[in-house]
Image 1 (cartoon, rainbow, N blue to C red):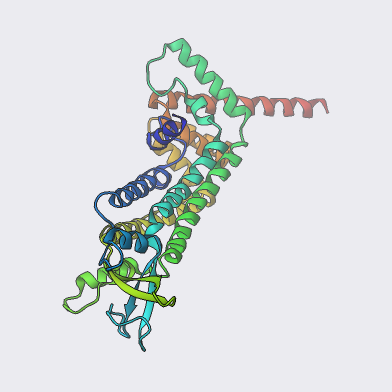
Image 2 (image 1 turned 180 degrees about the vertical axis):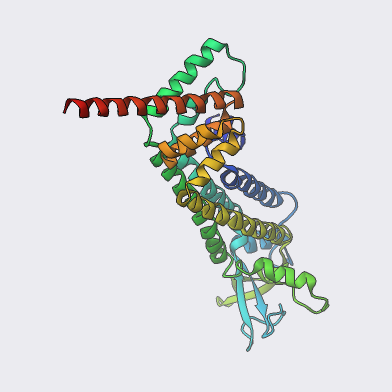
Amino acid sequence: MDVVSSAKSMFKKSVVHIDNFICELHYRVTVIIVVTACAIISASQYIGSPIECIGHVKWSSSYVNTHCWLSHTYSVLDKDGKITQTHKEAAGVTVVNHAYYQWMPFYLVFVATSFYLPRLLWKNWEGGLMKCMVSGLEDRNLKDDDVVDKLETRVRYFTNKKTSHNGYLARFCVCELLYLINVILQFVLFDKFLGGKFFSYGTDAMSYFQDTNPLAINPMEKVFPLTTSCDMTWGGVTGEKEETSQQCLLSQNIINDKITLILWFWFVILTTVTCCSVLYRFAYCLVPTLAAIRLKGNSPLSKESSVNYIKHHCTLGDCWFLQQMSKNMHSEYMVMLISQIQEHLSASRDDSDNNESLLDTKC
């Protein structure tokens, strides 16, 4: 039950937003895509037969199929890269072994887990702070006295913890960077997994689809061939080893090549938008004006003077923390919070100035 509950929480959309849309593309959308692909591939291995080999007089077809599935198959390529029926020991041919189809479901589980790890790290670092801050303020259904009490509590917290939210922002930036590093790493690992053929998998496939030459070789079939060979070895009547080659049809690869193409395009899109997100985050940290613009954009009813005052008297992390709160709070409560924070900061600054003036007078 705990496993089922954890899986449901992974796909359930959070009520409180503690990150952004780009992060959700990684830990929610990508995980759903990969887990769905894994389920389809796993199911196809049990519905029908993922491999069909020509049986031998000594063994049944089911025995040959099981043997070739559990060991491996191979393709013999000529000098032009085309699959040929020539014996693998003939001159001028290349033998390519295929064993990855057995590991596709397991590898996709690893991919899905990798995309969710930065989310787990951020939830651990965030510690439920945002949920605590906006609790009860999501909808406008509180009594006025309750609203005043809750906002006063939030204002006191914010002003007491002012300047401490830079660490909150820094940890989120680390997680954003981890998302980018992870998707690039998945490209590299997938390429290793497929024998160095994943980097150009999508571009090669697009070139093939646009090619009008009827003799063009489908690049996806080089990675996921439909027809392969499998060697069967046994002891002959003379006691010497005998070997025969079986022809196999890998119907499983009809699914594998399409899923891999979808994942390739998704990884390209995800890498692109994540790079843009990371570049924006760098700009956000380097240009303080962006903090005020985003805070004002998330709370358009707030006074611009209040937003600008907070920007000048708070840190970048403080502004980003308020921006995150504005995603989860009712707009009217957010306007009141920003206004009260500005008033509190202004009053605190006036008291500080008066105390300094009094000290100067005494001296």
